Image 1: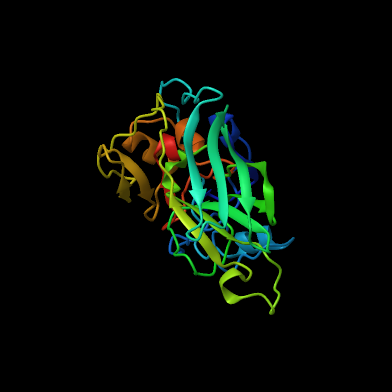
Image 2: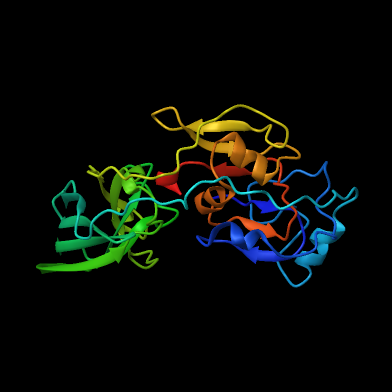
Length: 300
């Protein structure tokens, strides 16, 4: 989920932790999106701009009333954004799983490793005649439900065995606090075999257990505070943290990145650091109406 955000329309630049220096480039003489055009949260600024070699040309043509070039935003005198890492080997969650009828048993353990997490599955045994899979999800299904997707940390534990086995799986979205994943789900990973009993058919949920997290607090030097709407930053805070700090911001027409950064008391570099999938087009600094900016360093 995350955010499809673009700024102006000149020459595409990939932006990551390198910060505001990537905002430079381009002459700003090509048209930006129409003032009346709004965007949905996707990687494309317009539904008409489809993927493919003509996508960029289509974006350039979509503007009926071009915006003028804008000056490159000035940086606030703030240090580069940082966030502390969780020490390697820190156990964030651990527990035992047993299916309701006792057919399946295993142990799981989530361990930090730099900026990533690993889920170790061990002690797996099963008396079921099908392969068994496991995953972490935010919203728990019920035993007997059929899954429609495979969640985070998905792994196949194996087929019937009385000899304990194990495997490990990376936790995706590893730059986030993983405690939003509230349940561990065990399911049938069988092939689509019509001869199997329906309760162990492919995708059937075999067990659901809550995940209890113990995630150490992380520190950051990025602390957004909403100083209120201003020209170039008239959007709304769409979510807040438990402490009341702004978590996400919905972009309004004519919002510009420098003004939005100033509204929240952070640098343009920090806005980009908080939004890894942001795309920057030369020196055009308009943001796309209706898309969302992340403002929470813990969930970046």
